[in-house]
Length: 309
Image (tube, rainbow, N blue to C red):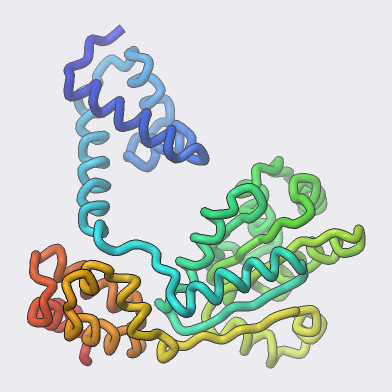
């Protein structure tokens, strides 16, 4: 057994805390996140059997330094039940209760993803959240991603994957797919088949698509989407001009507490541009990091980000 220094023991404590707070992250996954080439390194460190721990602890220290800096930087910006995010949150709840397909699309950076993530955070036992990236270009790759997310066995064949997922899902569950514009017609048909399967049994499975406007435009224009489109229970469009002053106050409570009305109005103007809430958050975070989130500080941060208001 290796004799560790107090600093090294403290870093191991951070590792244990992280794993306890993130039960979905395995020891091997955390090791990869830290930068270890082998999943066994973190295991050996925790057991005290790794022969050359100094460099490994330096990696752990560097990893948590970055995380601490990020958390400090974001300390004043939390999820807020804004006008749009609250509506999307409720829409996902309706999709879960009623089953079937639901589409929520809108401008980039207006809070769609935040709402979906918050819903999943609040309903961890009967909702699943997946981000669809352009690499998931086949039904099999999508099914493997779903199986991995819900804890189903990742079978080799497509049909066995489908059955494995169905067995793991349950009545009253909702699957949330962010960046849904990246889905292909075959993938959407496959997802619809899950909902249809539960419907045939007198049960409900909600499939909620969240993405940019082209997701619905694509569905509406392509003839092959007609059957899918007819099965969609709800469609909602959201735009940045629906963002309100009250949304800004909720998102940046420190400004309301200090009665910084001009700063609130400035961030609202940014939020109503194509930069949306994401742009307003970015400007505030940079100004906050510079320890000047007055109107002048916000203007400097906006100029640095090349945002014109």
